[in-house]
Image 1 (cartoon, one colour):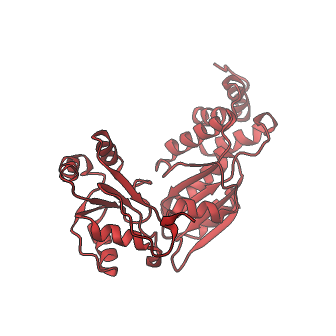
Image 2: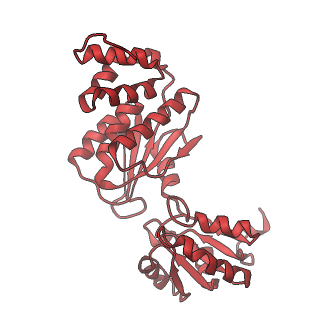
Image 3: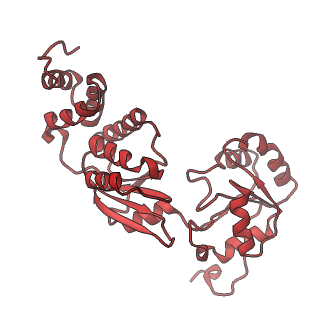
Length: 297
């Protein structure tokens, strides 16, 4: 056993900018080292000072806090770098989980590293990794994609790009965060563009109403269309099955796409998702739409 892993070993906390992971729901997941790092800091930067204040009170931490979020990160960086140059320790936390993972802080970290300043971290909870391990799907390799685009057309285009990457050789379990009010339509778009493959929806992890629902994408979409979810959500999607697009039923895919989209958009989506020639997809789409073979250019 390494010396630092022994019970009672001297505490070692990183200097400079310290990325401190916090619980994703259950306060009992706060590590002793995270508590020590926040107590030892001269300043705690946080997404929402009100959220972090509740956490600090729970553990008797009186360190001064300041906001660092999407809208003020750039203008906050110079003052934080000044503190780091002066030898101060600055902790960075997000509202929940591991900093920078779909949360602010990346630009600050890059600025500190560019100046040769110390950047360290205290590991801890992460919703995406916990959802992956609970999903029953292949744990590696995996690809974390953050939040899909909120608008339907952009979201389907992003999924089509992923499907094209899979056709080019990408084979990984896919992880996404999603807002509750968009969950059903996102799952439906995934089923349509990525194919109806196994998936899991992990909700409210570590909290009282934790739920992990495992099924195929279409079934999950149908369930959450009638059962409105709440809380923080992670979607885990199985890798593309080994079948090649040539074995897919092109007409069935096109009918599904044409039922929800105009011909041009449906053709673009199906072309990207299957890797088939656009002229072939366009010709079949015209035929199914009742327009004959038409001009496939």
